[in-house]
Image (cartoon, rainbow, N blue to C red):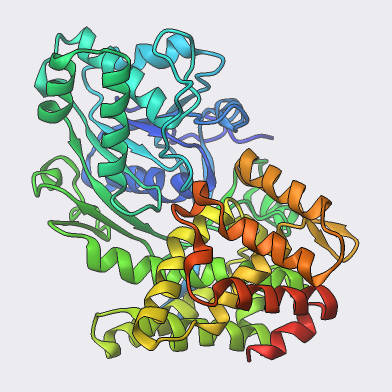
Length: 482
């Protein structure tokens, strides 16, 4: 029997107060879980309308299950292993705007709607010049949101009290500001008028935010055991760690509308989230991204086994403590303490976090998460950080799309995949050919925002490591940097 409101006798309906762009594992285990908790423990009395941001998505699966799903939270808390699960009942419906664009815009008519959240990956907050206002569903997330906000503005005649608190969760620096910047650009290009622009400024609060919870997602390896334990089928079972943190840079008045403290949630509303963001992105996300191509090409599958592995574990440890921590300005003791906690979270015995689930959009992730550590290390020490450079070489090899005879299912923007496809298909097998690949990847300014060949010795070092990986394989090549 499939999970549904008939099966779940405690099913409740709440007014739609949150619009959410993204139906993936993370938002469901993070935002939707928190809304569920606020409903149950703090009388928030609100539900979430989920908008599918890309053409291929899961909202049809959500709707088939009456938007219910089971969330497992598992981890170590106060030295105790804890594993819980519950049905999350905070989503009202899912809309695919590519098929039901009018239904999507109609949500703007609801006066009770107050919050907008999103997680459309690092590549999601981007401008697309092909997006138009009146030609059906826009391709980009900011394009869709601009059209929605304009509809809201139009319906309520620019009433400032009908604006939104907008909290993007994409892991890019100053995400709220960047989102607002792109929306203002669309407003100008689409000639939406000064009154609309004034309403964007005066009626809406764009918050920058930082999210932290490791979410491995669907437990494909143990799903048979999970079904047996639950006694029903759930195509959207989600798994996350117990730890969670949401830092929101915005006015303290947000706490008057979100009953955070009453629900016992680890949400911090702050004036400046910069220290939290830098620490988290560099020490948690940075090692994740650096680890993926190295560990996967070594033959490993999950974060847990990578951190426990004699060789890869040493690589990850060195990346964190010898390279990343050395580039940060917070007190050293505090950084080491945070890093120790991260290693513990990586080792969570319950969480099977697949390397391939982190591999999505690895190029933009490396730029956001690891490149700042690489350049800052060079700036402070006068030499390149060997492990972070090796990781970038491994990433270029990873995008060849082969692990031995196995095809790697690469997932990235089309232009990135095309770039690598062309480079590797033209590769002639020579060391000079590898240098051409490295030079072309580093010169791809659309991803990096600059030509990385300008960083002293980077092209040569990456080429050196890529030659080793190509000729000896990862197991031998990694010895060079340990």
